[in-house]
Image 1 (cartoon, rainbow, N blue to C red):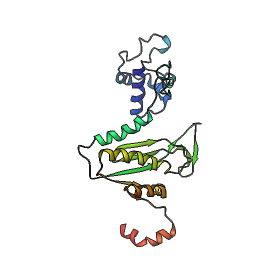
Image 2 (image 1 turned 30 degrees about the vertical axis):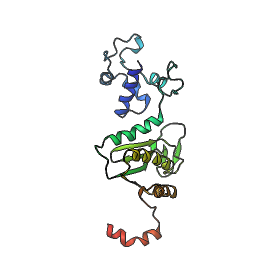
Image 3 (image 1 turned 90 degrees about the vertical axis):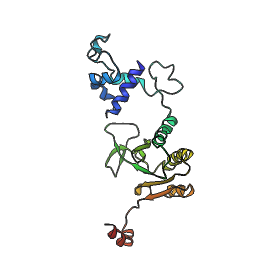
Image 4 (image 1 turned 60 degrees about the vertical axis):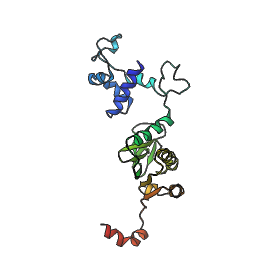
Length: 229
């Protein structure tokens, strides 16, 4: 059933198996079958002989399930799942807001870009000089342990690319519920960009951003850095 297939994929992701081809082995796993809710935990009662011993679906079946569009998902024989990306974005922030009993006085939003290494010929692969590998460069925004944004990007972009759009969306959603909460963003030198600082100053958002080092800056801040150490 579609429910079983979705459950198999979701539990696989939760357990750290991100790639679909992991399920060519996981389909034999009786514990995962129990989580999914299968009654035949060993797959011995499967109708087709070639499927017996495999209580769950293989990667090819799961692949056909995904990548649908909202317009076609209800009628397509295979691609039955379509993501509402705007609703997913709102959900992450809603879960964060609901975790508080009352609005906090101040929150920090941490922005970060990190490498997601690629090992094949994936669409959009690009060699990143800093990470020294072919990778994607997703953008993450956290507040404490709460993930507010995870945006997949190709690695041929600046680390800060898209940050203003995401901040505008997230800060707007937070302020609609917590209008008096002070918001401050925090990030490394990869986000020290005029567009981000200008947006923060215009929208009354504080910021603490790293600066890329150079000899002149290190000389000017020598005493302060020594005192900090």
